[in-house]
Length: 119
Image 1 (cartoon, rainbow, N blue to C red):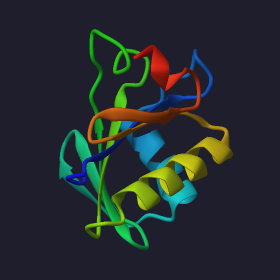
Image 2: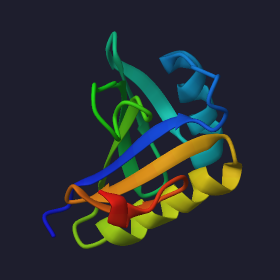
Image 3: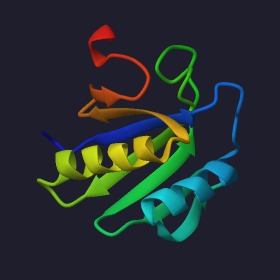
């Protein structure tokens, strides 16, 4: 594995369409992010205990980006990518506020709302 960990996110309630600011606040609370800073007008960077994230609004015309318009790129220590990615997925899923898809090296690893085998 080369270490690509990406989580695609959406609000758990289908009619809700949170802004980047709102979802950043939710992620900071759920994942314990600190040192939040704006990378550019459409990207927020934050630090967790053993990872760094880049959050952006990145909708797509096709699934899964169509229904999960927020992209959370994760960087962590080499060799810890799977463990950290799955832990963050579970923390977000357990919060009940997000629809989440975890990609490890762009292979769907798990999802809260559909089967990865469908991709």
